[in-house]
Length: 119
Image 1: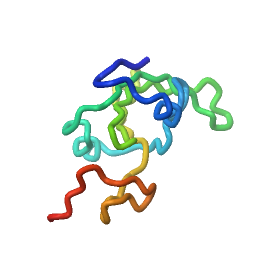
Image 2: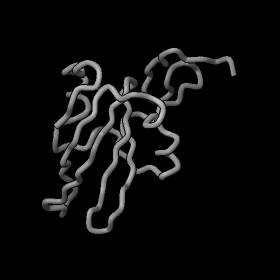
Image 3: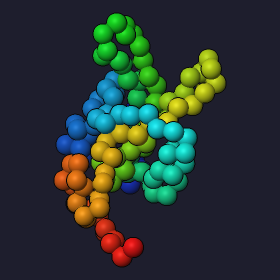
Image 4: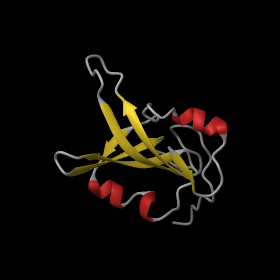
């Protein structure tokens, strides 16, 4: 279940990220270093939610991944998944891994918000 950070996300946006038992699009594991350098420590999420995602992989009967997802304004996000028995936390990213070298993402076509090319 999610809770409101700023405004309630657009219902169409929520449709794109999947439901409570779905992995969001672009779900991928990231390293601790990548998480430390992610938006998590620099920007406020627009939406935070907890999911119990079910694996749809063949033979993964009842395999469930509990996660806390932080959604950001640019249709990306980061998540934390814990393994209670091992006492470990794993980090994930989701959405497009934007490449804004031209002011527009070369992967999904999204325009960069306040893109600065002054480097």
